[in-house]
Image (cartoon, rainbow, N blue to C red):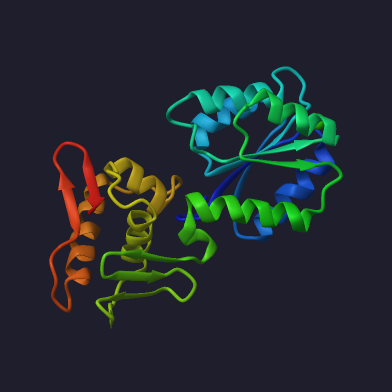
Length: 229
Ligand code: CA
């Protein structure tokens, strides 16, 4: 998985539908993992840490509703948006009635274009930089579309890694990120990088953010990692 790409988990037992979805999501630049059953889905959630899940209701074994219910009960996964797919609108009504906590519902047969729009709309909430949103934190403005960063109106020169670090921080100001989490998000899992590399790039980011003056907005949290603000 490339660094910084939004991760989407597609859970669908029907191979043709699964591939169409995965193909379209990959074409949008998403890193896609695929599951055929509810059990696989629960395993992949732990392995891949998806940013969003597209989840079919009718699955062999553990149903989509049950997967949704379990993930929404866990503190580490409850904020991952889930778009539930369902064959009939009555089922959607039932899902709503069951209060499984799904974030959106799409009735089959759906238009892929519409489903993509719903995926982007959920991502705008949880990973705004990955869908080209402009992020702001105090006097720092990051335009994810043009990759321009300004502070107090002055443009900042940032390397690509520092840009991805800053996007990650600005998506969730105040959140403390461990070095491992930053490696995973900014460098990607497939590349071996020492955690000390994170410290090096944090140093560069700090310097870049202060190149026209201003105080250092990156906070070192001892024993835990780093946070913005
Ligand atoms: Ca199905």
